[in-house]
Image (tube, rainbow, N blue to C red; front, side):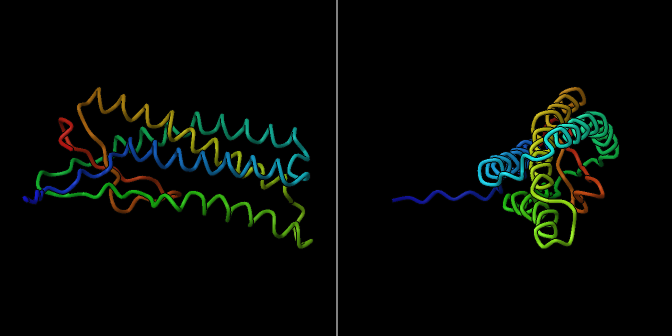
Length: 178
């Protein structure tokens, strides 16, 4: 009986792949939260016109601002030197569902306690917003990264120091070295 061992480490997740995976998880979390709210809480569907308007605004803002931010991050990417082993800085996949749940709680709980004026319909706007943000990452931004990678013969990775609010730091390998 022989044992096969490998000494090479797995390639780090590319930024494009992480956008698809993390965006998909966020979109799925938002979709599940939206379905649950609509199925279980009558108040979630109140002020439907306001919800539709706010989600439309988020969609337009993401369609404009998302590619602009991405273009800036791609332009600022630093070349990763051969011999370094970046990790790709993946976001833990349990984090997006937690973010959705916490955001909903932040808006719904005060309303339920009589402290704030928002309620379950705000929770629905949060979950739908997360669905839209996730789809934007997984579909639009990942495609834009793929196009840039093909055009410039690069493969992007997320670097340490990236933040959801503060921006993404990227590095790249030339010639799809990953």
